[in-house]
Length: 264
Ligand SMILES: NC(=O)c1ccc[n+]([C@@H]2O[C@H](COP(=O)([O-])OP(=O)(O)OC[C@H]3O[C@@H](n4cnc5c(N)ncnc54)[C@H](O)[C@@H]3O)[C@@H](O)[C@H]2O)c1
Image (tube, rainbow, N blue to C red; front, side):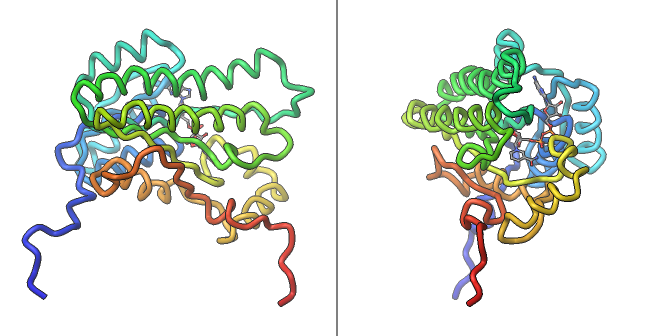
């Protein structure tokens, strides 16, 4: 077969794309910043912890990429609005900032409920509203909000986190419906269990850690690097017909119920 003039490899290329990662100061977000850069993107690294964002941006730059850091609190409407105005034309926004408070509902205070809700759900709303509006004006863009398998399945202690992650999923679907006619795609990624500061207390409990590893059909936790492929896919032209999706990266957690492996 004759060699194609334009390789389809370029559909994943992010060269010249201006991307923002909110939550880039640590965990999955820090690794995504490097991953987007490796595919050619300019990466703004934003985090409520400004110095952590700077560490990530400097590391991306040291690795040969183009990046700068900014402090951004997604729970502050003024902050999010100002960032959307200041950064102007962005091709991609990735939101990973979130938190969990693992307590039974009976023990969860209203203040704790509101803290998680404010970051995970209100933060997602503000990011979609502010950056989505700018992208709609330009008739282009991709927004990726991190949800979780907890949008679908729970265990004791996941009450408010799971509720916010299910909320994020429906927000994303609604945004996809509203922004699709303006050429803006909005998708969500649902990790299973990933080794980051968010799950450090689980990792510290050997029984809990092993139970989570065994729940996935791959029999292990994810490394943050394993979220890069899905994120680059949704950020790039490779997903030009994908919007409103709930993309699981969960090692098969949701595929098998895991109660019992029959002797066959
Ligand atoms: N780690 C997992 O096992 C796992 C599983 C399922 C889903 N997720 C989801 O993936 C995403 C990333 O998780 P992670 O493990 O990297 O979390 P993490 O806690 O390791 O990192 C979150 C980052 O967000 C930043 N942040 C916190 N509040 C902020 C605010 N108000 N404004 C801006 N930045 C803020 C933190 O400083 C931190 O750098 C989250 O949405 C999480 O719910 C993670």
